[in-house]
Image 1 (cartoon, helix red, strand yellow):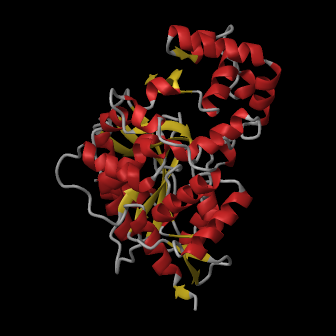
Image 2: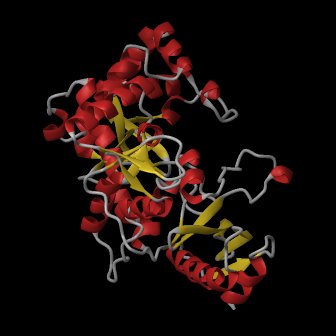
Image 3: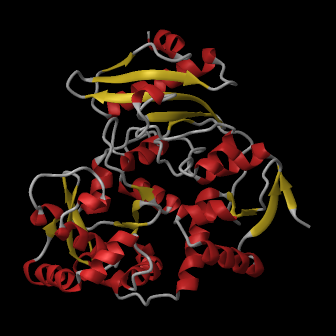
Length: 400
């Protein structure tokens, strides 16, 4: 008989699985805590937008508090990293031990079936050039996209990349090269065999089916409770492969089928999922945070519609350019459009909106406290509210 969960129980399970129900460390955060978090999440999305902070730094802040930002850089791009870069959810950092689990995706890319259509077509039509780029890296060592620049920078998008950048992106997706380090935010590429530790690189490659089931279990552990679509989205799995993988995991007893009240689709529970009696979270979430990046799940879980408005014309934005939802307890109670004004040393709250169920007398002080922690973490001396949004006045008062 299928077990039933209430929507509130599912929500608490999900928050706990993401590490957001645990108390933050009281002392300085070190490598061990950061590596444990990265393994728990399984994947950390990378994004270049730096209005507040680049998004890959933010999941650590949401869960660990004001941790040293250089920890991520050390684990991702230091001399002995524990993370590697590849296409996980989107461009992502993942624990090195997972590299063999993504080789099926690399093999699909080499076959021309697993990349963007434009990159796949470029590789087919420019095979000699791609091979020449690979040979250059083999002989001369690490390169960047800038080493292949052709004239002034164009508009953003793969269609404006240089020929060399197209080749590098294909080789990266195919797993033949990977990120050795970053300069600023620019990738420095080298041969995968020279970057990935030999113990990982020489690990036998699992079958695509084995790897996909393993990825689904990592997603299930990180989500706690999830529908098939939720599990599939975590690592952007093919529909048919995810469906078969979930069925296999249910049949083997690795996942428990359950029903969540109010959810239209069947759900699945990870065996290690924990159901806290209460959640006392207080966390600002990146718009690319693992808890909320799948918008359908976010709306189903929290009853709130969250959309990224970066590419929306300014006059049409509802909440702002770079909006961070505020997780308070087991609910999203507010959203703030933030900007780190580094020249003035101020974290600017360009708008602050509450949800329909928000008690501003409770939310505003909690949000103010978290904004002050974030400002200090970013090296900013003050928090300033612009006055836009229905929560702005209460927030300004709470900041005092």
